[in-house]
Image (cartoon, rainbow, N blue to C red):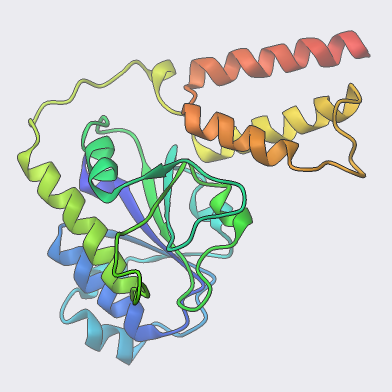
Length: 241
C-alpha cells in the first residue's frame, strides 16, 4: 500500500501544537494526508512552529465537520484508543496494523483515527471503524500525547513498508473493500428492513445494530458481497410490500 493512501485523522483536537507535532511526525515517516475533524483550535503560528518545516502537510490539510464525512472515501478504518469499550470491538496490535496495511493493494484508501486529547473517541465514532488499535504503555502512566501516538503508529507502518516486497497484486474492482459511504448506506437499509419485519423495535432497539456493525466491519465485506446483501434486502422489501 502507498503511504499516501493512508489518512491520519485527528478528531476534535484542542491544541494547535499537537496538530503541528502530528504533521512533523507524519513527515518523518513519509505520510502526507492529514484530516482534521471539527478542530477546536486555529491552525496558525503555533501549529506551524511545532511542525518544524512540515508546512506542506498543514497547507494541504483537509477539514471536515464530522468523522463520517472524513471517512467517506475510505474502505478500511482503524481507531487509536487507550481504553476498551463496553461493547468489545475487534482489536489489532501496532505490528498487526502495520502488517495488514502493508499487504493491501495500492488503490485501497484507509484511515487511522485519533481522538480528543482529554476524552478520546466516542463509542459512536469507534463504531464507524473496522478495528481499534491500542499502543502498549506503562500501566501506571498510560496517557500518551496524541502526536506521540501518531508517531508510534506511523513508524510501525513505515518500517514494515520498507521491509515489504515492492509488488502487491491489485484485486478486481468488485473484490475491493466497500467505501465507508456505501457501507453506511447498507446499515441504514438493513435497519429499515429489520424494523419493517418487526425484528427490530425502534422504541427499544438495544444494541442489535451496534453488534451487526461490529460483525460486518470485522468481516471487511467486498463490493460484490455488499451488492448481494443489498439485493437480498431489496427482495425482502419487495415481498413485504
